[in-house]
Image (cartoon, rainbow, N blue to C red; front, side, top):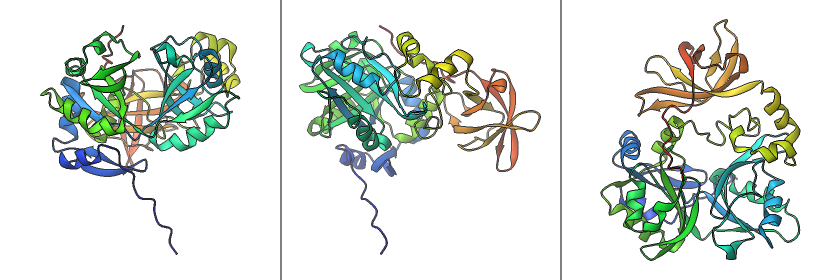
Length: 378
C-alpha cells in the first residue's frame, strides 16, 4: 500500500489568509500563503515603502531554561559559535547550529529576555523545516539542569518596512525605544507580546510572538492601519534575496561553514579565540587563512534570471561554483543571484557566466546586499 502523506499543518492565521484571498502552497509541512491579491511584486514593493505583515508562525519557537544565565548560555555555546554568555538582557543574536565538521545544521535567533525573573532563559527561533531535527539535536546535548521547552502554543507575526514602527507604536508606544536586535515583553492593545526589533527583509521591523489564541486579534488590529498590508512567502523570499540574507537549505546547509557563507561577523571575538563549539578547528582555520570558496552576489546581464543550481563558469571555461538563490529583484528591477565561487574569482567586478538552459549568460560579481539594509540601530 502507498504511504499516506502527512496532512499539511495550519497556522493559527490560516482562516485569515483564506479570507484575504491568499494563494496557499505547501511549505515546510504547512499550508502557507505565497501571495495575496496584490501579487508578489506589489507586496515586495509595499514592504520596501510601507509595512508588510507576514505570518511566520510555522517557525519553531522554544526556550532553553536553566538555573541561571551563565549555565544556560554555556550549554548553548557548546552547540553554536556565537557569544551567548555576554548577551545583555533584552538583546538578541543571530547564530548557527553546527555539526562536528563545522557545517550548518540550521541558523537561529537567540534572545536573552529583558525580565530579570527569566534570568536562566534563552528564547530560540529556528526554521520551520528544521525545527524537529533542531529540537532533538539540542535536547540530546544539554547538560543536567538545562532543559528545552517548546512553545507550540504561540504564533509569530512579522511586521516589516519603513512604516513598521509607526504602525506598531500606535498600539504599543514603548516599542519605539527598541534598537535593532533588541527585545522586550509588552502589551499591544491588551495582547501580551514578546517583541523583537528584527526580521528577514533587510528593512526595519519587528517580530511579534503572541499566544496562538490571540494571533487573529493582533493580525486584524495591525491590518486596520492603512500603512500595513499582508505579504506572502513569495515576496518574503525576494526581499531576503535583495538583502543578501541566507535561506537555510539553499544558501547554507551542512556542506557550508559560517565563514564560507559570509557569516563570520556572527562569531564574536571571544569565541573565535577560545573555540569550544562544533567544528571550531576548521572555522578558526578559515578565519585565519580564508576559505577555499565564498558566497557572493551576482548580477546577470539582461532580463533572464538564474535559478538555484545553475553552474557558474569562469572566463577560461572552468566551472567555479553554483547559484544557490536567484530570481528577479523588484527593487533593483533586474535579475539577481547568490552563489558560492572559488575565492580567486570572488572579487567584486569579476566577470563570470551563469549557465541557464544550456546558454552562458554574462554576470558580474557584486557586493552584498543588493539593496542596503535599513535597520534602526540603538
